[in-house]
Length: 299
Image (cartoon, rainbow, N blue to C red):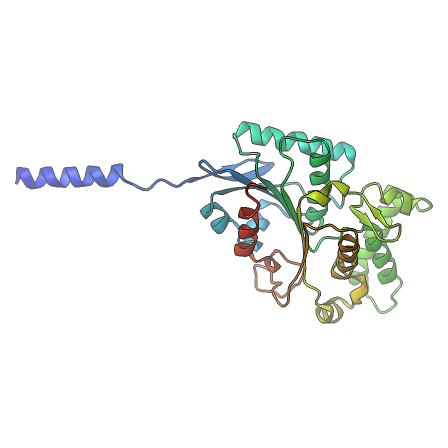
């Protein structure tokens, strides 16, 4: 009996000592949520769209399991409600991210930045600034998901919608907000001139405000579903992000942006509740995205 008890104790002790320990540590603060992989040599920074937070990124973008499985730490930033960021905001955000990297000893040799919708605008502007200033966390790659990267085109689209007599008050709320907000921020008489200062691209003026992204891996994801936009929002395809992204992509290809990719999807856009919507994180193939991130090593 003593021998049996002894064996049980030994086996139990071994099981406790060999209890698997997760290689991922999750740190949550008011400003961000970090999924840090032990000994990771790659870090992905993600910005949400609209008024969303880290919570919504996790719900709509199934990146965490496969990224951490491949030893990529993921930083979900609660930086939202910004259609654009000016120089002061960009500098401040840069300092905050550098502080996070320093505090958690995150690897800065292989940084990738991504954003959904207006979060993509933030990713592009921030990334260009970090590269220009040779910042410690300057990214090796950036991707954006169906973002309004031409703010003047967004303003023009809102103006067309606002003049549509077939739209009810609910449908007019968004274009009315954009028109009023842009007019207040940029001035009616100098709107195009001022908007170019913060818009990543401005087709009307042939302006590219993120030139330092030419030498890094850059991806634009979009799902050009003209039928969905017409049936659900009564929006012509020429007034969608997808159309504008296509036109900007053509310009980048003509300008020999050799590391740039336009990725157009079909019927992949769905929200976490199952609703069909082409303006969604889900248009990104997460496994292929991780392969893209891993493929930049050594570049």
